[in-house]
Amino acid sequence: MPSSVIRRGVWAIGVAVLVIALAVAALPLIASTRIVRDRIAWELSAWSGFRVTIDGSPRIEVWPKFRAILSDVTLSQWTETDAPPVVEADRVEIDLSAMAALQGDVAFSTARLVRPTIRVQRMASGFYLPPLPTGGRITRSIDTARGVVTANPQKPDLGRLPSDPFGTVEFRDGRVVTTADGKDTEILSSLSGQVNWEAMNSEASLTATGIWRGESMQLDFSSPKPLVLFAGGAAPVTLSFKAAPATFSFDGSASMSDNAYLDGQAKFAAPSLRRALEWSQAGLAPGAAIGAVSIASKVNASAGRAKFENTTVTLNNNPGMGALDFSFAEGRPVIAGTLAFDTLDLRSFLSAFTPVAPTGDAGPVDIDTSFADRINLDLRLSAAHANVGPVQLADVAATAQVKNGLAVFDISDASAFNGTIQSSLRFDRKPEGTQVEMRLLASDVDTGAFATAAGMTRLVPAGTGTVSVILKGPGKAWNSIFENADGSFSATFGPGTLNGLDLPAFLKRNQQGGFFALDDVANGSLPINGAEIKASISKGVARVDKAEINSQKYKIWLSGIASYVGRGLALSGGVVPNGQPAQQPQQASGQAASPAPAPPSQSLFFVGGNWSAPFISPIAPGVSGQ
Image: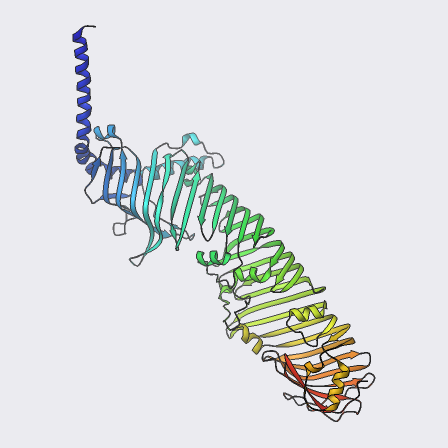
């Protein structure tokens, strides 16, 4: 090859290298004058649909990548000049195309927002969203896609969707605020993440981390057809939310049209439902922690209503199945449905949603029934095994209803103490104050076990019996309910034994005269044929109208008053041989019994002191215990 050809080739290569070097060296100057100042703000405005202003001096970097660094950038609505910016960032870094820059054009694939502030507004749906732009390529693409979806909502022609590029948007150390009365209220802080959306007709994903209500959280969202979703069509979506108090995920299809809906599988889990409710600021102040909860269900939601079918609920490692229905009425959430458990702590379950179930240290605390104005609840519960404190139940059917200031919790049927239990707790908010009604009916139960569970261990017949308790009264605090309630108590007992009473020793001490403690004659038991007790209750005091215990040889009767708040006793009684009528003392209304002359064969006595340490005072000599 001639040397002249070689020399010309070397010269050509050298000139090309020189041109490239000069072009690279000139890029910052060209960009600073033509791109940054004249085109970047315009291009960002055309892309986003917002008015973009760049107050700081731009800076161009060539290595390791060609990019523009902009400071004090704001995105505002074109039509509301007095409104605060929708987005403002301390710095924006934009990756540029070098070849496009040399031609005086702007082409970028990635934008990084450093310390951005995003302003959102509370929508009618309750969600916080930023104001929508009135123009721009993104808005035009969505409008075009909306026409495609409208033409065939069931199966839109994806080939007609716009293919405008979007790129990647990264954000670091940002925050989300809402503005009211000229003041910003922070919703999210330490917000970092990115949006990946190569083209408008391609798949998109969002990943974000931040701090919400004092807890670190992570949000992941993706859809293979995001433009169809934003245009009001149905598209597959996956959503995942993770935070220490709770996690949530959804996988299915969604629509953002006027008839928006969700249809798919959802999962929710929280290590403590009480903590999750407090953190969510749902307005429900639970009084006791229920512990871990997890829910997995098929969800169909639309128009302010969500149906949860084939729902699996696990409370404190106790699984249950059922269906739930969520909706809104008069601005209140409405929860209805049925749940069936193998094992359930009823008090903890109710305490998770309402503050009315008493806890061990809630005696003097006021009962907050304001929740009944914030939620409507109608749940049907069943459990093979359940407990209310120390009481163990089986085959439980229960309901929980809350509506318009009224809260009712019923156990309509349950097995316990070898019998059946029915109970009801009712809170009714009235102008004069909250009224409380409690009912309990224990039928054919083991009365010894029932009395032990109720904290009554003295002189309760052991056998089979039926107990009924009805209490009504004002309910400001738990202790005031029992202090101010009116009602009734009745019990009937079948054959059994009266433990804690040595009747021969009792009669002997009573015949001898002088005070003595009931504990002195408690080492024994008395076989009985049956017993019956009836009492009326007023303001924390039970008036014993009838109390008779029948044994083979004797009848024991009592009358008088007993305080179930102060636990004091003021009773008169007697022991009379069977076949002889008991001559009970006459008593004036509101006074303790005053004994009348008794037949020689009747042993009369007075019972005083308190329930835990009663004492006996003989009234007249009586029959021998032999």
